[in-house]
Amino acid sequence: MRRKGRIALIILAALALVTASSFAEMITIGKTDCLLQPAAEEDAMKKYVLFPGAGDYFHVFQNCGELTAGDGDLLIPQGSSEYTLCSTASDEVIREIWPTLRLWAEEGYEIILIGYSAGGYPATDLAVKLAGEGHTGRLYLLDGIYGAYRGIYYNEAYYRDHLTAWDVKIWASGDRYVRISERTRKVGSGLAEDENVEYRQYALSHDAMKTLYDVILNGAEGPEPVNPEDGDKGK
Image 1 (cartoon, rainbow, N blue to C red):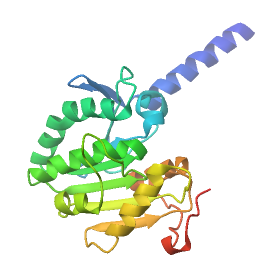
Image 2: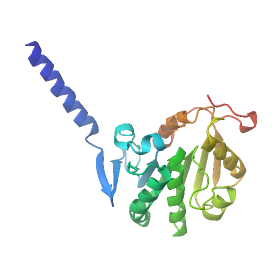
Image 3: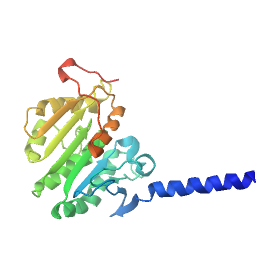
Image 4: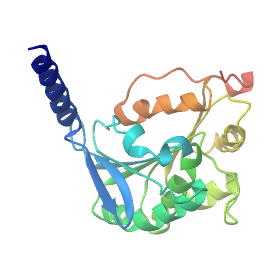
């Protein structure tokens, strides 16, 4: 009887897991595997695309499966583990999913691109591509302003040259030990007075910036930003 009870519990647990994840789809765009979560509450003609940092980029299905957006579909592309450099993997993802993003924009969806850490590179690149074809949208960079790659140097002039028609939100940590955090603070503070840019700094570590996903995707209450003039306050 005890054995039967244990088997029953295992079956119930398995069914619960299937039910909890039944709304998520694993799809392939081109050759890129992606996790697609439909809107949790209502479809408001929005498409969220999240590019996580290198720690999750190659393990999207395992590490990002619980993420959903309340008012739009959420697409999370997974970089190929065959590539050792996150930037090289991102080039593949950019090339593969670009036609889909362009089609969504042409169909009238609002495109919201989110780039955390190294994920800021594909998010920015795709925003620039969309802007180049006359589409507007929102770009969130969470400690996500990358350095030079392929001759592209992300500085204040780059964003002013390409994304003045976009709603750009640059949120930086106070982490003094991570170079990408320093660059995000530098460029963000340089763009803070631009009309289309919102710059915030948080008293969070670089890793803890991932907690802001829920603020963007579901309007959750997040921590209060700090005054950048007070200096680094990362934990």
